[in-house]
Figure (cartoon, rainbow, N blue to C red):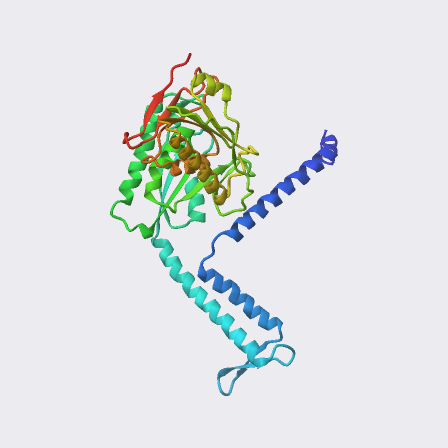
Length: 387
């Protein structure tokens, strides 16, 4: 038996599996290295890095520094020999400038580190999906830094077999989470506070959170769950990564004036058009769809901003068509939904309701959250009756 097992380890399938695992590991490390490279660096790190390069360059160009100890004079004596390369004055000046850059960078880093420890990070974390308990605060502490204070909104006790049994209770927790954030921000110096959002939550609650939180900070950082990462998934920040240029296309956009309109967005998965037709009979549908549907192509901040701008322009167009109420149906990653909620101007745009998808339910979109607007101060649950 042992011999057979050992033989199996050397089969072609096993070797291919090992090679595939190694390739995935290399790709993962390559992605992390790229993210580290494109992340904004502090000026102190910049000075230390390029100062060290300058010192090495002058040494490589022929600068030789000799340090001799003379016992009689009891002092150190330094000499510079540049006979083999760069002219002496250039090499010496480059060496001195490089050392000064390193020393200045170190001082700046020490100062920034002191400021870093003073900074508070308010993390608004949403938990609405069973089986994902990886600590987001640890990742935020490692990538953003500062003293992380977590405001946890956990609605998982209201979810049974994938369905939200008490949406009103869950919505109140979401609203309370935003209230907790406001209390912690009250009377504080905003320059010392960083706001971070991350988590996994049903689409209506994520969208309305974007609407509610947007007023509290324009520069907040956003994290999302990468299901395809090695080890079962990991938290990743939405950064200024490469934008693949893929955008939403209106595959169906009625132009007639109507009081109600369904606006559907297919980003990660196609929305259920049959379910939409049965849930909203007689209401026209405007459908915007990505050219390439993907759950793992949204890590670029530029791309998400562009998608949000397309969404806003469509909302303005519907408003110009005298639409009074927009019924939103969105299939997208959590961070995308959050940013779409942030862009929704509830003072100038029509009233909106964002709906939850339940494939086996009748209706398919059984309830939604009405967004606060000029005529409504707080979000509320709206139920739809099946046929």
